Length: 209
Image (cartoon, rainbow, N blue to C red; front, top):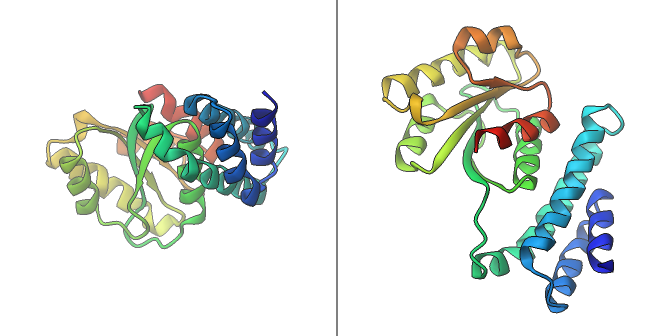
């Protein structure tokens, strides 16, 4: 369908002002909302793969993700009316003491591009906030923790321990990432997954649902 091809292309190119109207056009043409969403998810998948291969960079990823967000805003009422279910539910946040959010935002947008509903707790999130959220939302199956400083990496460990102490660790998978984070660190703190970039994080989370 021509309109979906156009929507894929405009999403990949980050044409935010055009994606919303194209989504509306597709709806007006009677195209199923889930097909429209799949077209944008396909576009983000291609961008994510290119990013992982080093063929595009953070700015291109961000504008594509924002274009998709603009499209999904128009699509959400139709998806809700059609009873379309998200792939799964997750929560994300930058850990206590760390104010960085570009990487976290990119990960969230790419995960949403995979059909995951992601609650974003923001930056400088205390372990108790993650515990509180998971405790109140049993549908949440993945906790994503971001740290961009070596000095805030211990807050990842503290958050995981807080989930253990609250008796909630077994009901969630924990994904961690950020510039100083390594697989070795993930093994030390008992995380379920470490991913080096946003594209691989979005690909990994799908395995948990």
